[in-house]
Image (cartoon, rainbow, N blue to C red; front, side):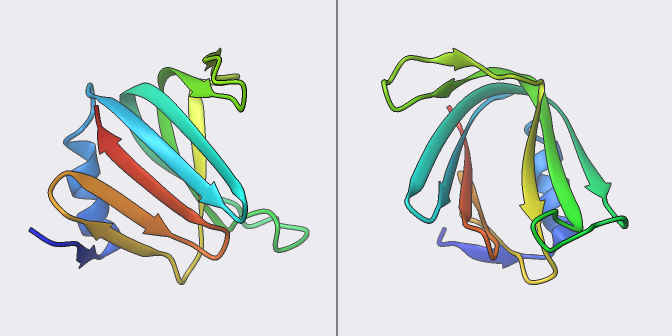
Length: 115
């Protein structure tokens, strides 16, 4: 199965099925690559209508769970919070190939996969 584009509603429905699973989130923004491992406990969304500038996203996907983040030194560090935020915008693209999700935003590309 190749990558298929999803609506936000279809994306949410499929991702909700991964609650309780161990996932890896790869974030690629400009020249920065971060990898997060977490046990996904809940999925929520936040809407911010009181933005002062475009840096603060209008919508945020919040992945809730305990996990670690790989640093440049390859030493796993505990996540500073049990929430991992992915900024979304009106032009975000959601893709799924049966094994992994890709979210493309104006800031970068995020990959979510089961491990």
